[in-house]
Amino acid sequence: MSFTQLLTDYGYLAVFLGCLLEGETILVLAGFAAHQGHLSLAVVLAVAFIGGTLGDQMFFWIGRTWGSSLQVRFPGFSERSRRLIGLLQRYDAPLIVGIRFMYGLRIVGPIAIGGSGVSPWRFALFNLLGAAIWAPLIGGSGYLFGHAVQALLGDLERFEEAGLVTIVVAALLIALIRGLARFRSKS
Image (cartoon, rainbow, N blue to C red; front, side, top):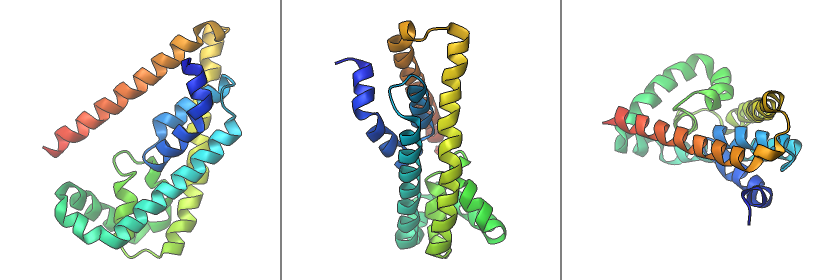
């Protein structure tokens, strides 16, 4: 089974699962795959919107249920959470919409917001708005990246397998580097 076939068979599932968590890298890759014709851009954006919304809602409810115990158990979370709650008191709507765009706060942010006493309905409304902005912006950037690469290299069909593997390897390296940076900042 080729990499292209795996992408076609499991691409939407990967987008959904990736967007439940942080999702930017997988969404850019899915936008690129949509440009190549392996996935539908409209379906990628819809799946990313649903996955991103559900992921943040899930983390919000984790914070609402276990927020204070998480702050005690994870001091790094507690520090980020305190700073976020200070901003939340003044700018709750823009912060809820924009939290998914802030490096290092994509998971911690909704948990902290859930523990802060923000109404679940208010969070849900602004979370939906944030996901509606985020999915086409990030997925569309991957699609536009495909256009740019095609303009530079011409027919991408001959580079397709190698290009997709290179992009996935680059994405994994970026994720690894980000993970190591987070680990180092905690120690």
